[in-house]
Length: 397
Image (cartoon, rainbow, N blue to C red):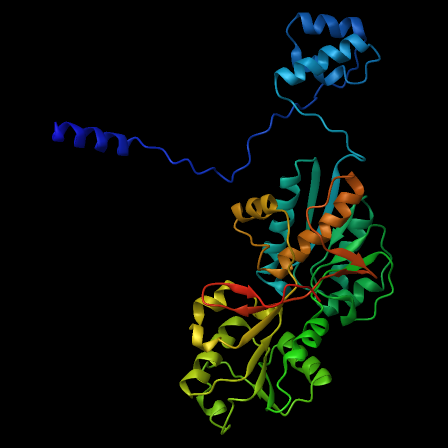
């Protein structure tokens, strides 16, 4: 009897099925009307009698016959076909991609935009305009091509160089620059709005945590963003020392210049890998700063992987990525893109969401608002906890 029970259990385990719901959206039924002809009501009735159900559904929507419309609605309910009336037709998006300038972000931003539009389930057209770099001739030719068509929105993830040029051009469609905040350059073009992180706001909020009695230090490398962050910190906080990290990843000699960093406040303005190496070597040197403060540049789960908890125990990070529709986030993740921690992907999607909802009257999937020509990102402070980022304060700045 025991052998029989064991056999039955084994078979049941082999054929057991998981009850975890798949995050993949359910398939949709789409009827494509390829017939250019219009039909009168009596012909539509014959079409239905002959079994041409989908022709009847496609062609009877503008009928004035209440009986036909009721019949159409009943058939649509029977086949579980949903119909929505939109404020406009196909949503048209142009995407300028300077792939040699923004590197991996060329594909991640455009793919995130595509994932957003696919998630919406509304007819759309997305056209990529790839250019090698941001020289004026390439941008001019691309804008001329775009201006020949009617787009609801143009997305251009460009650097300051490209943004300066675009700001001085005549545009016929709204243009969104997700890479920069408006305070990074002087742009009076009313057709352009920005979506970048407000690093000045983040550093101002982080500065409230500075230990006034201790040494105040900025840590950066030679990259433009890192240098900009350290320069911004110097404008807000009276910095005592500045450290510039090299490329070799060995910072013991740099750290050994200091006799005591235990009461210091460090503004860590380097990318995640360098930040992780610097923090671990601080620990090896038996230094534990009072506070390690960082902006969006280090808000990534990779930091939690590359560092030990005691390396980051006193670390506080500013984050401006706000809540977004979870279904959208999951669907974009299915195409291997991230909008929960990748701020540029998030900003790209949030900016498109604002224009998309205006054009289609669909509800918003993100909460960020457009204020004075730039996305108004709120700032929250997080501690780098043992396994996750922990909200430091229950309110936003």
